[in-house]
Length: 113
Image (cartoon, rainbow, N blue to C red; front, top):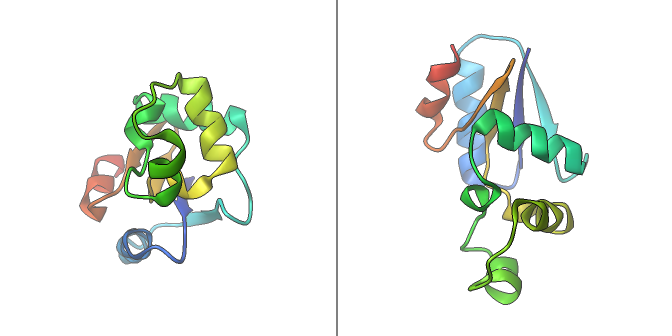
């Protein structure tokens, strides 16, 4: 099964969703603003992305600039930050089985097919 972690208010996330729809595959949409992440989910997503948490931080967000810029945080601290401020997590993320990709640009998800 394919899942897209999506924010409908985000242009890049909407582009990823449209691209996935164009693939003609079945998938689920997970709006992580309405269904918040758990720490376990984030750990699993980061493992599937094969990235440290810091690589998934949206540094242009006000929350980052006001609360985290210039700080060195552990993965666990970033996971807590993503839970408290979900807009800090880059999107869209597309997951298929045991592999995930940050789909910006959307064509990056092609490695999953």
